Image 1 (cartoon, rainbow, N blue to C red):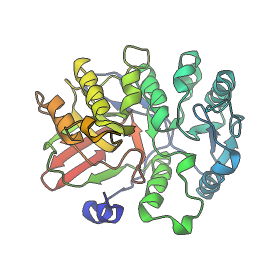
Image 2 (image 1 turned 180 degrees about the horizontal axis):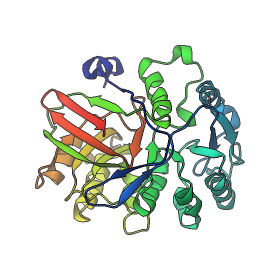
Image 3 (image 1 turned 60 degrees about the vertical axis):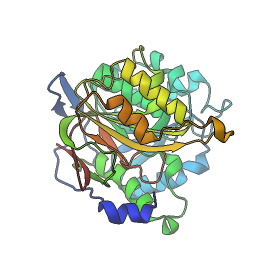
Image 4 (image 1 turned 135 degrees about the horizontal axis):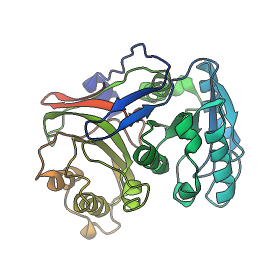
Amino acid sequence: MNRKNFLQHTGLLIAGAGVSNSVMAATNSSAHSWIIPPYLQKGDTIGITSPAGYILEKDIQSAVQKIQSWGFKVEIGKTIGTRDGSLGGTDAARLTDFQNMLNSRHIKAILCARGGYGLVRIIDQMDFSKLRAHPKWIIGFSDITVLHCHINNNHRIATIHSKMCNSFPDDWAKADPVQVQTIESIQKVLTGTKMSYNAPYNAFNRTGKASGILVGGNLRTMENLAATDSDIDTHGKILFVEDTGEYLYNIDRMFWSFKRTGKLKHLGGLIVGGFNTKAETNPDDEFTKSLFEIVMEKVKPYNYPVCFDFPVGHQKNNFALKCGVRHRLTVASEGSSLIEN
């Protein structure tokens, strides 16, 4: 979708309201209380680490400078600039770096520098007892979906699904409005702004309203977590999904997996974000159903609202979302909205 047209069509709104900095709770009607970590104040420290793919220190400098301009301090982890093949250091190094930031009382939020692959290799060795005692925001997307699902499901602590250091532009003067707004949405989420998002009308949308805890992330990553301690719980939730670089038949298979494992059955609502699909080398092998047809085929037996073209995913219009926080989803004939309660 043309980004300029997207902005004009949606009139994207991210609204603010004053919020207490104390630890708060959001309650799902079918679950125990959820913990919302304290929102950040100027002078607080954000740690940057690479629990998945590697990244060079020079490639996080734009993010460091922007975070500092927001009034926060930055602590750079030892995995930044470290490499073990495609990973940000050995498993032991990545685990130690992330665990130290989880345990450090002065670090109020942890920003994962990039995604890629690697968290599933160390998630079972992480100790979240200090996070439960002193909650802090965990930030990222893509492979960081492993952390969102594991923390949301096991500890009911809210996390932030958003862009990471490798998405910050080197030259802000050349960044387009969507790129700027999406990164600024990270600051808004961290400081307690009540968030609101709009998405354009899509003929495949299914209208309706829903209220529930927001969960989700990368579809392939969530599918790979099935039947593990990190498996996502979707019952009564508003689920958002996104993916990139997948063939349409793979997307179809993943949605069948979600349907067969019951993850689509008891949803409050479904949000479909960006899906950058990969074309088959041989056109004769191309899967004939579109993304919209794939999704609607799987959710046909259910009656919850379904929203397409939501601004989340491996794309510039990837806005920060609070996983584990109650939202209201409205899908109407003129478009869709997601509003934090």
